[in-house]
Length: 68
Ligand SMILES: [Zn+2]
Ligand SMILES: [Zn+2]
Image (cartoon, rainbow, N blue to C red):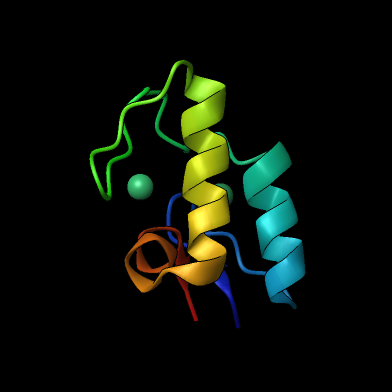
């Protein structure tokens, strides 16, 4: 069952989990620097988009956000 590593909530599907990360997870780091790869962004919102988008395609970002 896909679980949000940041807040511990579980979901039935990965798409529900990603929707949770995008819209309602309160534990996403409020930083302009990505905690996984160290890239810096113009705003917290851009960092969050990067983190979630990378999690679809890259295993280290995914492992930071998701446990299955
Ligand atoms: Zn969460
Ligand atoms: Zn990153």
